[in-house]
Length: 142
Image (cartoon, rainbow, N blue to C red):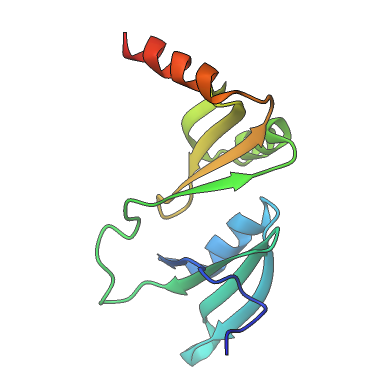
């Protein structure tokens, strides 16, 4: 039987400093749902929730493939991307892609977290038809 509390798919990020990573994600609206202490009381596993989604974190160890941050980008829908961008700027977070309107009707930006995982924060700003998206893609190709 599946655990009804968690979505069917929940990513696990292996990170260098779990407690610092938890604090980082909390600044962007994630809520710590569970923390599991290991030997010596240091946190070794955590589950964080955001708008019904779960992000699990665990401490990287000798079995972790380096670099810690693989080819994964997290795409997070936020109610106000401008406010989220201001928050990231205030925190001095590394911005990978600046805040910009996209041809598919969203406004977004991408940051790197403490371990280099890319996170795109995005907000719907306008409805775009499939035809308009196709035209925009064709224009980009030329």
